[in-house]
Image (cartoon, rainbow, N blue to C red; front, side, top):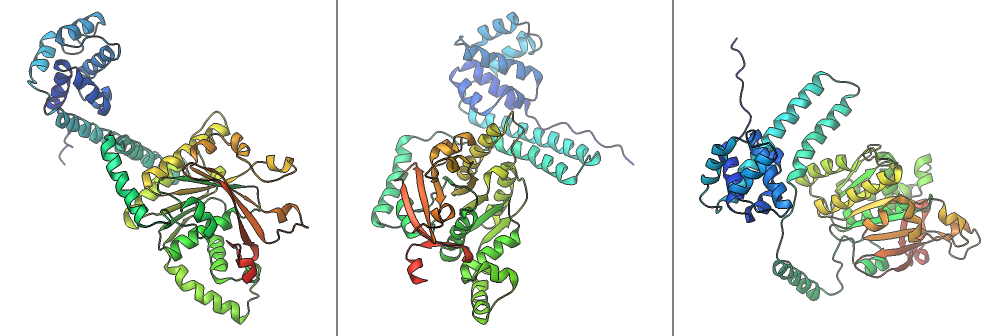
Length: 444
């Protein structure tokens, strides 16, 4: 058998020389290169040293040209390691113009990515051969290695204000011609949609409440409306309830069947008729559920990327935020802050609203008025700052059995980055796993 052929790693010394040469002859090229490349993107060690030296000089407002660079490298005892006077002079004179600098940068960047992919793949192979613990751990680590490489490329470039305004005016004109129409993903609740105009692309929406207020039910009602009434594609990450339980709640809501009757099998002919009627539309709805416990935002992003390519994504629900895992931090508050920022980044990347449910602390219990306030989120890291829309759920009947507001709930819009705040009253029909517009009470 022939011995395996050792292949050299992807590289383009000529492109690296052209990038370095451009930085030496044109100081304005330094910022352009630094925006895309770091010293680690260069294959040749001497080029790494030259790049770092030029960048340090530029950062410290020093003049950068062939003479000053050679002097700097000499003073830092790196001249010979960088290739010597003759080599650096040749590199400098090899580039007559910086006109093609963008092309040189792209070549160096792509070769660097290929080398990192090879390095990551080699590490994945080693991890796979020397498996320690569960296979899922090896798989997660492999996915993270590849994801980190891909994430480095996902940056946006500057855009002139005139271009942004031109696009904005087109959107304003569209809104003007469709006055009163909901611009985002509708919640299905008339008064709430009147305040929010739906959930907007790139927004992080927080639904927070104390336990037993109906957070999951409320979120599922939104998903149900988006998928069944609006034809939207909805992703649900359920960290608390199994998929089957969510499916039952959706079925009860759509069929108007009591959850207890469904669980005990105590169904009459009318219930069966309603279930049969609801099952068809639900089975065709574009609702995708993942009930992985302790899922990380990185894992969510990976799963959403794949799903978006295949089916598209219009709305993401996370139930609930505090059950998610983050990277190890000094304390849980920092970890939750990191998770919150990552959720906002997920909304921006997927170009859709992300609704995250959040469990409130006992703070509202200590007040005479148990309605939640924004200050109740303070101990949850940067959630309040990251969220574009914060809604609290409150049911007076839970605390006061004699209340006049029976079968009612309040959706308190406490923060709205681009619109009004206020309270929306709605019906709560817990047995049917649904909220509704207030007139539902009178219908029922």
